[in-house]
Image 1: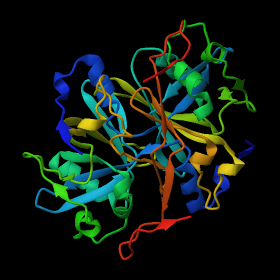
Image 2 (image 1 turned 45 degrees about the horizontal axis):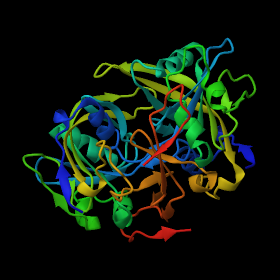
Image 3 (image 1 turned 90 degrees about the horizontal axis):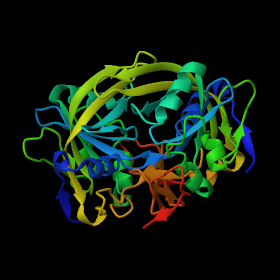
Length: 210
Length: 210
C-alpha cells in the first residue's frame, strides 16, 4: 500500500475528529445503561471501555466533557453503578441512534425501542436485546487534567453471556455472541474471519489453535 | 440465545483472565514500538489504546504491572516517545509472537522478523509491515492505585496511513487498511461486513450511508 503522511494540526475540526477517532484501530461497541435512581433511564453508545485487570475484574470508561454523555456520568456518580451491553449486528441502528441529542427528559430506551431489563436490586437497566450484559460497580472516578475527560473505573459484579459463546477455556467467542466492533465514529463491523493463536513462547513458532 | 450468569469470583485464575479479557468486546491490535535510546528496540502487542480526545490528538495506553511489558514502559519513560502500528491480517502470527517472554537483550523485531523503520529524529521504531503507523509523544504517566496498572497518555505527532483507506471525510476505512481486531487474549478478526451510519439526530430515523 502507498502510505501518506497526514498533518493533523492543519485539519479542520470535524475532519480531525473523524481522522483521530480512526487511529486507534477497532473498538468495542457498548451501550452504557444508567438511571438517575428515580426511574429515569439513560442509554449511551460508547467505544472506550478498556480492560484494567481481571482480579478484581476492572474496566475503565472514558467520558468526554460536555454533551449528552454527561447524563451517563451524573447517573453513575449518583447511583454508583452502570451496565455494559454489547451491541449486536441486529441492533446497530438503534444503538447508534442513542448518540442523538435527545431532550433531557427523554430516555434513549423509549426513543430507540430498546428494552430495559432490571436485575435483582441493581440500579442500572440492562438491554434485553444484548447477548452480553454486565453490571459494574463504580470504584473510582477521576478527571484527567490534560483535556478534562473523565475516567470512570468500574468492577464487574454481574455477567450474563450466551451459552453458545462460552469456550472450554472460559473465553468468549465474540463472533458467536453476535457482538460487533466499531471503527471511527460511525462504522460497525461484524462476522469477520477469526484466527486464534496459541500462547506465545520464545522457543516455539507461532501456531494457530482451534 | 440462552444467557447464563457467570460467577467471576469463583473462577480459577487462568479461566478468569480468559473470561474477563473477553468482556469489553472487540479491541484494537497494536504493536507498540520503543527503544532504550541506545539502540536496543522493543516491540509489544497491546490492545488497550484508547481515544481520549482529538484536539490535541490524545490516546491512553494501559500497561499492566510486571512482565515483559515493563520494557515498553521503561523505554517510554526514558525516551518520551513510542510508536503505534496497526496489526494487519498478514502479520498476525509475528505480532502475536511479540508477547513471548524473550530474554531482556533480545529484540522482538529480531525474534519475529518484523522490520524496524526509523523516521526523522524520532527515537522509537515503527513497523515496516504495518499500514497505519503513528508516532506518539508522552504527555502524562500515572499509576492507578486501584490495581497498580500504569496509564500512559500520548499525543500523536506523526501519522502515516494508506492512501486507499482515506475516505472523503478524513476518516479511515480500517477494512481497506487491512487492520485486524482482537478479542480476548488470542483471537484476531479481519474482513468483516461493514455498516456505516449517518450522524444520529433526535428527529430522524437511523440511516445507513455509503
